[in-house]
Image (cartoon, rainbow, N blue to C red; front, top):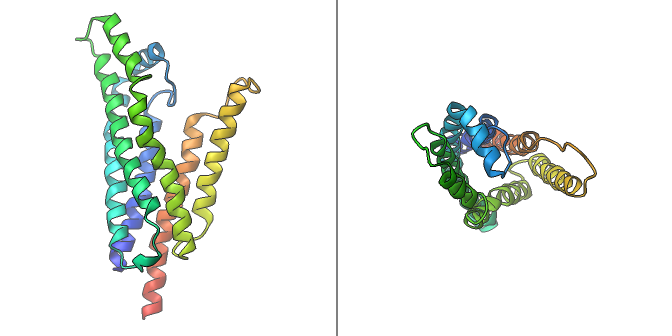
Length: 220
């Protein structure tokens, strides 16, 4: 059981790190302007393809960690599955989002020449198609917070990961409101906000590994 907990913690931390790296490799993360996306993707196509690959790997790591977490042998009656289910759905959304980026990568290939049709397709993917993607992505963030809170209530990890993830939410919401209201010219970069969020997840993974060591000491 201890090995499963250690592996789950390690994979969860690794998933958080690769999640952030995938967005670091993606030029100007968070933008939805079609022409701007096509321009920056065309300029950094290799980086975008690397981002797609890392993001797919990240989603697989999240799911594997969740499966191990469910098999860890804790009292299932005390486990609130909401966080696990939401994060699992979010991991699928994360994988789906990678294919949105892959489409942008292909649309900027030199062999694709019908420019107006490209803009039309990309505009659809950044507007109407988000109706399908966003409901899958939002559970990724809320599920991470719910899982961290639940694990802390079971005294498996501390409250620190939940606080860090919560702070990333506050920063992101405040930043969006300030930008919308015109209170700031340049908001906090999306990469920084996602970095804070990923740190919260990574800390949760590290504390899972630490918890396994405490179990081992308690059993010896």
